[in-house]
Each structure stands twice: as structure tokens, then as C-alpha cells.
Length: 125
Ligand code: HEC
Image (cartoon, rainbow, N blue to C red; front, side, top):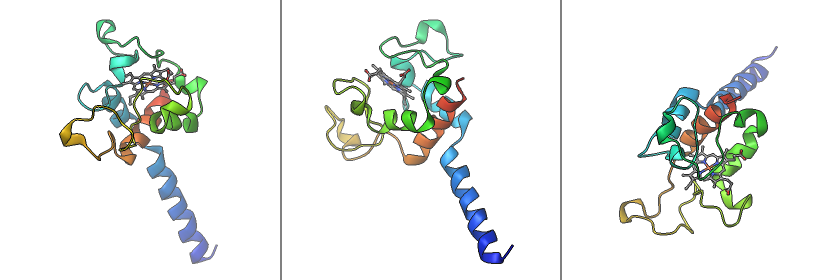
């Protein structure tokens, strides 16, 4: 195998590894009541029953129901699936309502945090 091909393959793998995110970080974000906030609206496996949200569907088994790409789209553009949705876009910084002054012009989560959440959701089978 020549060097250029070898390098291209290694870079490709590095890219895939990065895009996969980290399941444990994603789990912590989903359960966090100061950042991810998923648990406010969704039931998450392993969280105390009294603290589970019921506004959205339970996320138990979601990794078997939806593709990783579909779950990423939910986080980025939830209104694509339901124009009236109450689920916020985690990557947009425009067209949001009642944004706190300190949060103006900033997305709720960074791209690598969204990768971590997708990795976590994929693991919920
Ligand atoms: C303010 C409430 C709210 C928050 C916060 C929220 N969601 Fe949602 N989510 C919903 C609702 C409601 C739906 C159902 C579809 C719709 O109406 O948009 C949904 C749908 C989903 C779905 C599709 C589930 C399925 O079985 O079809 C996924 C995946 C999801 N949310 C993940 C998340 C993750 C991960 C977070 C945290 C980063 C999050 N949501 C935060 C309300 C919320």
C-alpha cells in the first residue's frame, strides 16, 4: 500500500471516530439539567422515575427505532419532523424564542456535543 493511500485511510478513520462521539459524555449531557435538558421532556433509561420528562416520547430503545442520521436531524432541526414541536434546535442560534441575553447568538450545544448525544442515542437499543 502506498503512503498517500495509507494516510488517506488513517485520516478517514480519524474523521469517523470523531463523528461517532462519546457515549458517556452524551449520557451525561442528556441527563444534565443545566445543559442538554433532554430529561426535562423525555424519559431516559437509568434516571429516577420521578425525574423523567413525559412531554416527548421515552428514549428507551430509540437507537433501534431511528437511524443515527435521523436522530442527528432531530437535534439540529426538530421542526422538520413536527413544525409545531416544542423540542428546541440544539445547533441553531437564529429563529429561537425568548433567548436569555447571555445566550444570544449562540447555539445550545457545540457540534461535538451533538456527536456525543447521537452516540448515546445510538447506544439505547
Ligand atoms: C422541551 C421539550 C423537549 C426537550 C428539551 C427535548 N425534546 Fe426531544 N422531543 C420532544 C418532543 C415533544 C418530541 C416528539 C416529536 C415532536 O413533537 O417534535 C421529541 C422527539 C425526540 C426524538 C424522536 C423520538 C422518537 O421516538 O421518535 C428524539 C431522538 C429526541 N427527541 C431526542 C432529544 C434529545 C437527545 C434531547 C436533549 C438534547 C431532547 N430530545 C430534548 C421534546 C423535547
